[in-house]
Every structure is written in structure tokens, then in C-alpha cells.
Image: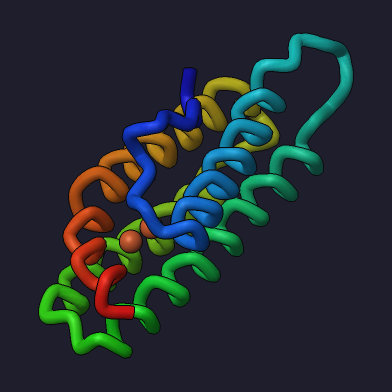
Length: 136
Ligand SMILES: [Fe+2]
Ligand SMILES: [Fe+2]
């Protein structure tokens, strides 16, 4: 299932893990909405939860980047680049697709992209800065 939280995503810092879990939680809500097979138009709910996901991701990225900045982390520029790519991609999807016309299919695509990106980013890029946790 998309946005299924796994123990191996834990990086060992309470606040960071909490934020990552929250990202997955919001993502899972978006994903579930796309799968509701009923007669209601969920367009507004779907857009709202995707916006929340984009907003919370930006909040979380800022938190990480400030933390890395505080410790003069050498990999900050490339890390921030990945964050920026994510935000730009989400924004471009939200703007370019006709979500109303193809609600289920398009949103499944979006949530698939998000869940893949978030888990890969946590496992590889975020894992690099866990060396800073001890120095904090
Ligand atoms: Fe992260
Ligand atoms: Fe990150």
C-alpha cells in the first residue's frame, strides 16, 4: 500500500521521525480518498489533502535544512536540491493535470510518486544527516 509507514524508516531522532510519520499519515489519507468508490465528488477533499501534504512537506524540509545549516553539514546543498525538486514536482502536478476529470487515476499516480519519493529520500538522503543527531 502506498504510504505505509515502516519501522526501517526510523532515523533515531524523535522529532524527525514524528515529522516523517506525519507525512506518511497525510499521504495515506490522500491515497485512501482516491480509492473511495462511492457516488460523492471528492475533488475538494482531495485537493485539500494534497495541499496539506505539500505544505507539511515544505515545513519539514525547512526544519531539516535549518538543522543541517546549524551544523554546517557539507551535503546540505544537494539535500536541499532534492527537497526543491519534490516541491516543484508536486506543484507542477497540481497545476497541470485535470484532477477533476480524472480523479482516481491521476491521484493514484500522484500519491504513488509521493510515497516512492518520500521513502527513498528518507532511506538514502535523510539517513546521511543522522550523524548530526549525536552532535546536537
Ligand atoms: Fe525528511
Ligand atoms: Fe530531507
